[in-house]
View 1 (cartoon, rainbow, N blue to C red):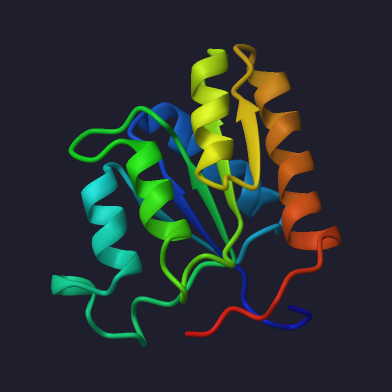
View 2 (cartoon, rainbow, N blue to C red; view 1 turned 120 degrees about the vertical axis):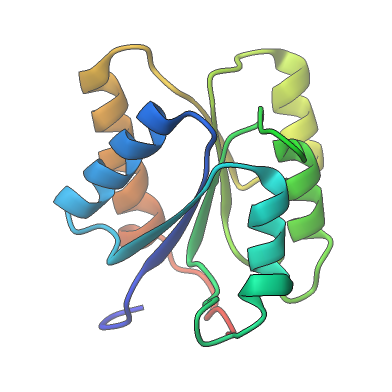
Length: 149
């Protein structure tokens, strides 16, 4: 990924959380671009290049997907399942970023091959620190296969 523009896909319906994630990733130059989607259906349309997202040049594959579980239209576990069941998408790391600490949610996420499960801290500074660490790990230190566009 050295020299390659980094694209993070954020699937989050809470606008305040989305803005904090985007601001943190951009401030620390962890991501060159963040594509934000507020519901599961639109996110899947982008990933599967349907409708307005059919052009591969404008619907580039993300290097990392940050996925909330509680989403309108199609929930996060269904989005995760669709990603991990697709041969072209399944190698993209998917990090669950949610407020749920429920054991059943953690189990469901990992049963559908989530790469990580993070619970959003309540405090602003803790949330910002989590995003810093997450970005550096997944986009800086972690080695993963090349994503095919």
